[in-house]
Amino acid sequence: RRDPPPPAPSYPPRQQRERQEHQEQQEQRRRQSPPPPPTPKADDDEDPVTRAAKMAERAARFANDASTRAEHAASNAASLKSRLGPPTPAPSKAKPDRGGEERGGARAAKATSSADADAARVDDESSRHAGHASLLGTCESMCPDAERVDRERNGEIELFERVDPASSSSSSAQLCVKKFTRVVDNPSPSSIRTRAALDKTCAHLYGLLGGRCDYPDGEVSLLRRSNFLWDRLRSVRQDMGLQGLTNGRWAAARLEEMARFAIAAEYLLCENVATIHEPDGHNSHLHIEQLGKTLTTLAAVYADDEENDDEEDDDEDRPRSFPNRAEMTCYSLLLRMDDHGPFRNSASTFLAVLRAAPSDVQSSPEVQFALDARRAYAAVNAPAFFNLVRSKRCSYLQACLLHKYFDTIRYKALERVNCVMNKSPLPMAAVAAEVLFEESAELAAEKCEACGLPVAREGESLWLRVKEAAFAEPGVEKAARRRRERWVERKAPAIKSANMFRWQALITGKAGR
Image (cartoon, rainbow, N blue to C red; front, side):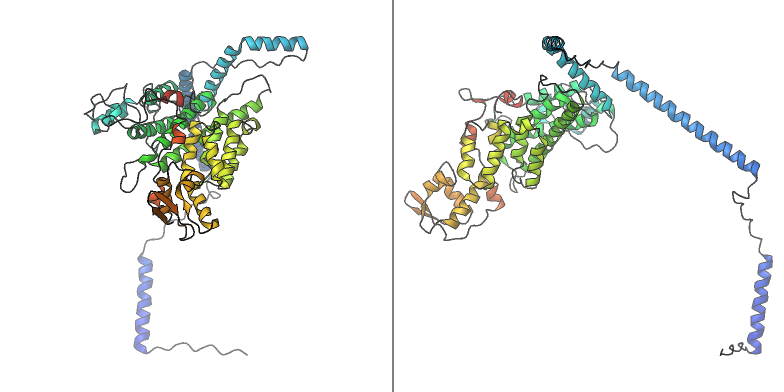
């Protein structure tokens, strides 16, 4: 059953009259207002002639745009072809027949023309670089002229770039070197250095190191030289990456030289590390980070060449493309044995570097030394670890990399001694010689006190009081105090009688590797 509808509201006579007047006013306004604009026709309702004209106009506009793009592409290709020059013919790779006489003749001809084959391989690499490069630099000097003029105007000329050592606003094309700046937009080819200019820049920078590693007062310190080279070599790597010059022997040689310099500088400047009180010191964290990036780029160069070799015919008599790959793989493994401040590593990273190397590199003496060092370090076997450092198997650059782990393994060994030994005091001379492998009992006592372990002094003798205090990790300030040690110094490629350091031989791999 439905409820009846509600009755219509009844208004008093006055309200009814006002309501009726309001409705009449609205009706009058509606009649006086202009009519609404007509609704545009849809495409389906449009006139066929008009629609055909619009489609023809649109097709003509698209054709004009396509022809303009084709003209631009043709002009760019012609400009690139004129700069690259004629293509270099690839060396012939005809397979010899399986007959014994033909195989012997081919091998004899190959042995007599090894120099020509190497030259053809270099030309093939350079043409491959030019084909894959997204940008081709045209600057033939160590620093673009526009940057040099701008830095002279702003007084930003470094000491090693000045014509007058007292003036920071005068330089020359023979001294000024392009500094590192982050690339935001597409750089101009005139600001990118060519391969010949990059070779000249690297030779000039390494020549600034001089013949020493310890400069007396009054001369430019190694810290200032290293900071300058660190920035300028980073710019060299940037120009190589922008042009795609990250393949082949040339790129590997430049990156290998940078890695050797960075490893040696990291050790030689360990006593000048930047702290809160000395912010202008050596920034070890950034240095290690850039070293890791250099070795990562170098591993990519090796991997790219390995893929190209797989595509070519197998030839057992062809020499190895990168004879220093085992050396650099060893450095990469030693760098990733443990963390370096913000530079984090893990066992998976270590294994990834090892598995990326071919079997002949994995079985090389350099990589086997890195695995032995990693095994001793992970087991906190300080005697085995330091015996490896002192042995002839360890080169100078390998010892420089392992130097960062000296204090870490010493503190871990000291913690174990404090846990497993009885409460009988230990002579500090024995702790220094058999536990910490320090040069003196005083240095061993400093490490014990930095960890909160009590040291008793009886006359001239020092004793470690075991288990009387809990072991505590040393603070950042105490842990950062590293020093150069005699075991590494003895391996340095130096001429002791003349107090000279063989920087060029070290960087080129002729010594210290």
